[in-house]
Image (cartoon, rainbow, N blue to C red):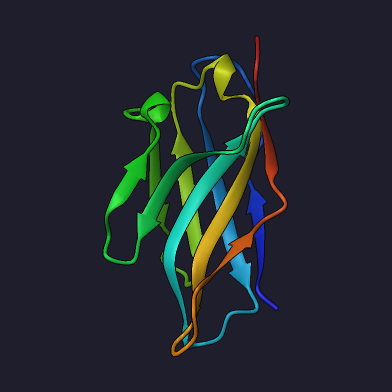
Length: 122
């Protein structure tokens, strides 16, 4: 029932900015998003963690995006954003929203969006 939908991808020039958003649907009042994050995958490469945010408020970033990207949980339940600044060609990839969570009293599981394409090119 839980579904994640990403938005905000597109074509930008090097040095530009984009803001990705992810919204979860099908979550009830007792659903807890223990960890929310963003992954990306470029053609021929493995999917890698870009940034994550825990329920306790701690964040983690890939070394390649530190100082340029910022992850934040939205005001609305089940939403997470990724602000991307000073984009580089190597940032080109399909970006996926990931949520690790579940209803209270149940084991957490991973949910994935279908991805949004970010292309950085001049």
